[in-house]
Image (cartoon, rainbow, N blue to C red; front, side, top):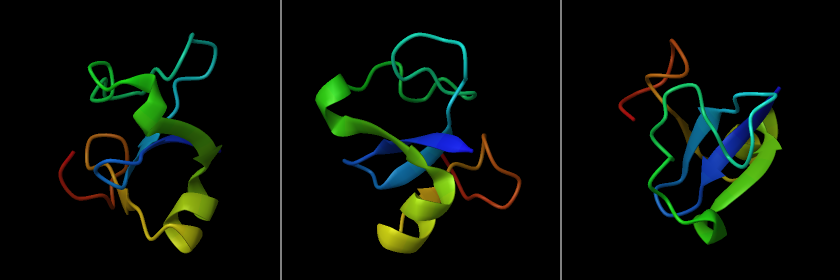
Length: 64
């Protein structure tokens, strides 16, 4: 599953597939400049970047 990594907050969000740009399930990245967002596999972001999961997008996440 792909996610949108906010490199400023180091938070991974669920990517809303079929949508344009970096749309996420929670909408928290709608105000973030695209240069701070990256589309990556969720597990890669959790393991490699030590990113936190968004609490709105993932049950086991914390905050948004």
